[in-house]
Image 1 (cartoon, rainbow, N blue to C red):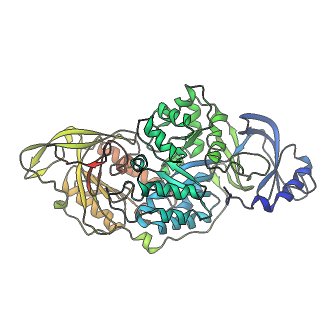
Image 2: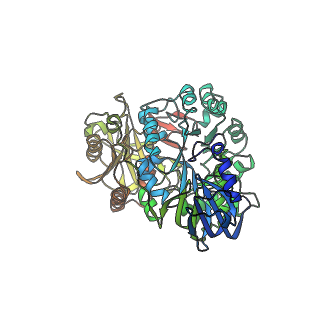
Length: 596
């Protein structure tokens, strides 16, 4: 694959690189006295220098002969020098930050590149929204590699989105300079069932010689997983058990081991490496979804490497899993992912390997971050009016949340969420009926939930019940509701649910918490109802306030709004609620809310 992510293409600077390596010409930058983490051979090489010119590495070893009058020299003082980190699967929208603010946060922690799947904004605004993010990214030092959203909608026929992606759209984006592959193919039923449209989307990626990425969340690792891998899909981040990750690696699929703000899978899936004598080359560490306060408090991939080390993975192996393994997954290792001659000069200095504490970050040979702060400036980016006005709903009333039923009690399906996991359980609960309306029941930890279509004024709404949030009174609403991002409302009573919904309709989207007719906290997300243009520090403070509000209302879930956001995602077992109704995600059929 041709790399479009270095300052200069390799063919344009091979003569210069060779001359600098031999000392005939002099380097732009030399890093001296480093302890090189060589991810090619999984070893640490003491007292190593590197020479950089034209944004690429010319030499690794003794670089004294590469130094001239204009060469910038940095003494690493025996710090570790490693390739800069790359996140092999990330939805920037889940950070609720613009691409620029996200870049400020992650570059400071050692991240030089991210492989983004912007299917969140694509579900709202289509490829036009994707292009907004691409333009936002261009002004930053962060190398932003596009994997084209594959599932818009996530599972066709089960929800209404603001846009649709077809094989022809995918073929168009494969010509983008920033495109390296296809975003997570969540429609595994379509792959396994031989659906021509689904296979066509993957096929257009393969025709272009680029990488289809995956989402196989079933625990079945036999014929189904084989069929999924056989379709050409190269990696998957949905392993929640060690045996899932191991099975994928054994089939030549890259297992992307996830540790995000809400999905804490690493403790379990790391065992695929630590408890088995297997080569780790097919394992990568990724974040998937990360909130601002996580980035500020813990970091990005530096934190995930640290977590991997805590789970027993060797530090150098863990660094391979955010560098060369990621580059090889996307067939870019000939230019990215290692510190070696000809490669892009993307590297970090680390003063404590056990905690992966990054002190300095270089991208294309430019010193872009120091001591946890980005030290380069870039121009602002303004999103279009269309992106800033995407919630198309009229004001709602309490009547819009009623679920009518005869009798005094009724058995219903309830979606039970699982703390720090993406899955749910389908529970049958008995609920009271008052004045012909099925009520939530705090004594059983059961809340009412509704999903309103908000893109094209179809008037469709799905209603049901959820369990496991711990909230006794009040309501919560958000337009971050994967993947269609319709208006999602959860609550104990219809009046508070209506107030929560209307608050977001008025402000253009976001997150809100309501109690007894009063708005307690709101996070406004005017960009597609998903992101804010505010600085990361402000966003982190707003989200921390929202988390405290959740706690005060009784929730003990980690990053609870992320867990709530998955209630409508109809490609994850066991049951989900979309704007069209209750879906059994084991059989992929709509089911009645009331148990007959």
